Image (cartoon, rainbow, N blue to C red):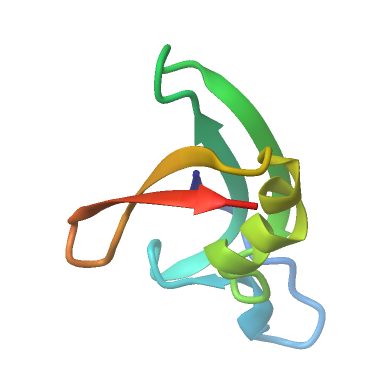
Length: 90
């Protein structure tokens, strides 16, 4: 799973709105959650769009995809230091 940000033109009502700000883009954007199959490298899940500033990746994951993973299903995740960890959910 990864949150993928896409640049947009910021919807302006009363100037700058931080809920659209993406630190990945350094500007306004929307975020989609994309999950790939470990075995086949196919897209198995997509969810979004969400305003980047309001929805960190982990919150999007917890809101839907985490509940869809069967108990004891193994998954791989990459941490901020780019190491890979195996996790069990359930």
